[in-house]
Image (tube, rainbow, N blue to C red; front, top):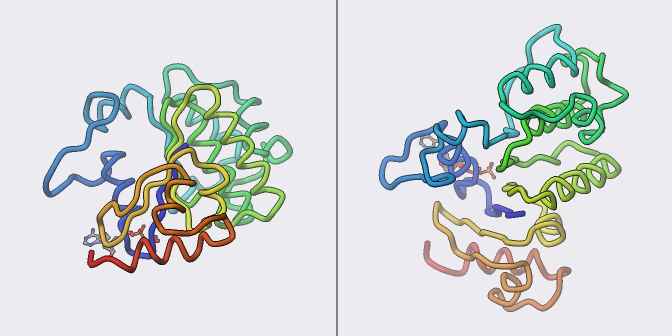
Length: 209
Ligand SMILES: Nc1ncnc2c1ncn2[C@@H]1O[C@H](COP(=O)(O)OP(=O)(O)OP(=O)(O)O)[C@@H](O)[C@H]1O
């Protein structure tokens, strides 16, 4: 599990767009699984949960999961996806009637349905309440424990510290730190998770980016 951290405008969403092939790089190249992002997406190896994206009006949560499953070669069972995403009781609910946190879980279900090798989550838990957040991260960890890679962006430092194996810190479009949570804290000269805010500020503001 890899966390992408960085202040507003650091380039997290841009990096994710490049990795997914949604935006072309002006310079350099992006390689996913040894090929282009388009190749990886077409092979069904990538699932993504983005911050935006309208739902089809009138469609239900179950319709959305079925649509995602139809796009991938080896999808998960519909009921499994609904359970993992915490939507088992909402399968028949229209997407345009979901609350903000429920809609995020529906986006998660869409990303998960194809059983992708790489799951990309852009600020996934932002609108979720405490209980939803906890069950969401438990589900994501179980997914990663099955041998998949999960890349997520977040502004919640404690989420990165608690759930990521590796944290990549961006500032002004550049990587300013890359390591385990303990290494990131050490690099910024703080000892424990309670000082993470300070570590983050030190890493993203002290140098001339
Ligand atoms: N298509 C574009 N053309 C030019 N600049 C852009 C474009 N899209 C984003 N930017 C700029 O690039 C910078 C990085 O934006 P990005 O959305 O990647 O940041 P972020 O790290 O995801 O920020 P936030 O935490 O606020 O979501 C910002 O200054 C933004 O205004």
